[in-house]
Image (cartoon, rainbow, N blue to C red; front, top):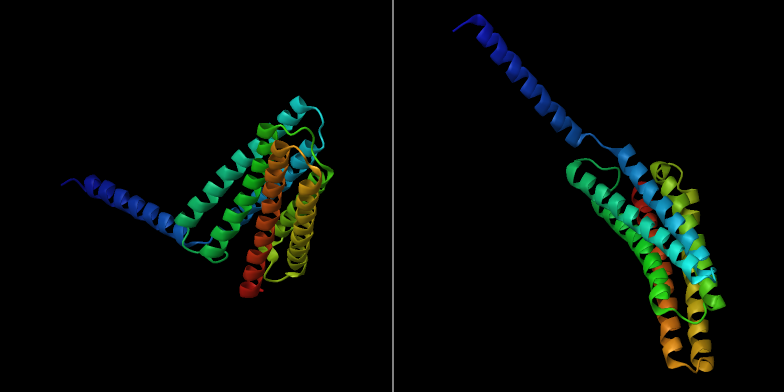
Length: 234
């Protein structure tokens, strides 16, 4: 057999082995930066969607409100793609910056926050209530503040093991906002049943407010998951 045949065979074998080793090491080496960047992007989408939600609830023109709703919907679509990317990374990465379950739960709940924001706006678009009550607008602002806290907390994830204070402050904010939202919802429902004489309008507004209140519940859960991560790694 010619010598150059063995040389080509050896070279081919070496290149194949090198590729396999690179693939192996890329599997076991942590992809921390990629995880953190993707999670930060999801937090940003939460904040963006909540900003649009406040604009949406305060927009009296129904056509303009629908345009804002489409922007919220786009945030949901981008958020879903980011979450899918993170879950794919979880499957492809041997070593992760935090427990897989914690990353999964955190991202799934962030996705829920954006989904509920979208669902709240969609109910207004579909139900077409005669007007948006003031407490509904206040609850949308409550959600915006919560999503801002989430955005800040997500940006602290990378250093949370060394400097957890700011992230813990955001968890406390999310907890307080959820309690405020509960009070708003109870007040709203009480007044609604006292004052609204149109049964259809009553059902519409109750459904919309209920969906908004569920958004704050999910935001609070984000805070709980963050505290779990802090307890484990700080």
